[in-house]
Length: 68
Image (cartoon, helix red, strand yellow):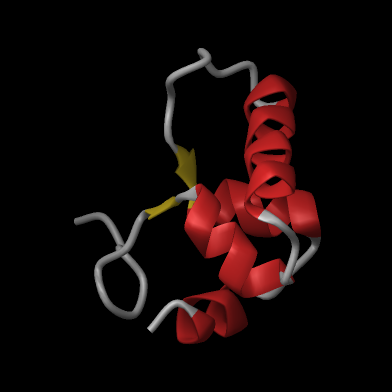
């Protein structure tokens, strides 16, 4: 069984990055693009919460709580 975090979210979207980091939407899109590049993902692939937290050096539990 896959652990989907506190409330079932597995992926992070640009608007989530805005809420977590306080950066602009456009910058959030750039951050997600950089994460995809680091993990060798295709252009349209989703970014997981785990990948986002590892890249941004954030605690997963805190991020999941913020996304509630």
